[in-house]
Every structure is written in structure tokens, then in C-alpha cells.
Image (cartoon, rainbow, N blue to C red; front, side, top):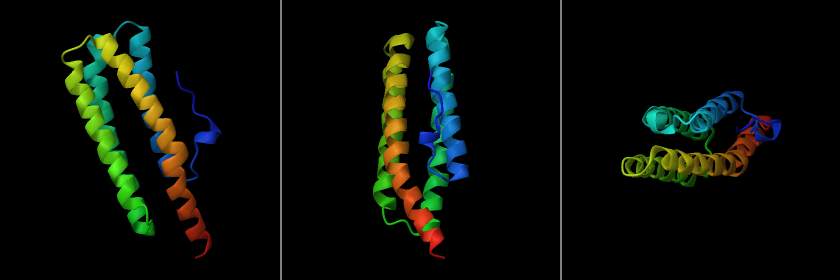
Amino acid sequence: MLVWEDSYRIGNEEMDSEHLILFAILNQISINIDADMAASCLNEVLGALEAYISYHFAHEEALMRAWGYPGLESHSESHRRFIEDVARMRSAALVSSGHEAAMRLRFFVLDWLLNHILETDADYASFIAAKAGNQ
């Protein structure tokens, strides 16, 4: 289970709240694996993840656009790659065991989410905070 820590905060309440929901989805994957329910629940969890990342990424990109963040294009590209990777994982899950697919998904999302929040999201949050302080 991944526990939210203050060090994961980027300083934007809306985005931090949305990141908490992503943590909850990731933790649901872990719960399903631990309860030996990964195979029966993987499709639902993948659907929830895909739906929520589409919402979150659109919201995050709109925020960056509104503040004139210069790294928007590369940030958006990382979002597109993540969406494509999750779609590939959904396809792979159809031909592998649910448990193995869930384990791969959990590792992938955990690694991506932490790196993305702590590095990529922290960059735009710092930019916005600095710009907001100058207005």
C-alpha cells in the first residue's frame, strides 16, 4: 500500500486532491492483489484508472495553459505516453494472468506516479507559485 506523505504535495490543493485519488486507485490494485482478486477486478480497476487519468490530465493541462506554463507541451506528451502505456497494459492483460498483469500495472503506476508528481508536476507547481507571487 502506498501512503500519502506531505512530500508528495505539489502545493496546489486541487491537484494534490486529484493525486490522492490516483493513490487510492493504485491502492485498490494492491488490495485486489492481496485478496487474490486481481483477475476478477483488473478490468474494473483499469477502467477506473483510464477514466480518472483522462479527467486529471485534462484538468492539469488546463491549469498549466491558464498560467502560461512553458513546459506544457512536453508535460502533455508524458501524459499521452502514460495513457498509451496503460492501454497497452490493458491489451496485455487480456492474454496473461490477471495476477501477473495486476502486479505489472501496480509497479508501473507506482513508479510513474511518484516520479511524475515529485519531478514533472513539481516543476509546473513551482512555476505557478512563482508567477502567482509576482502578480
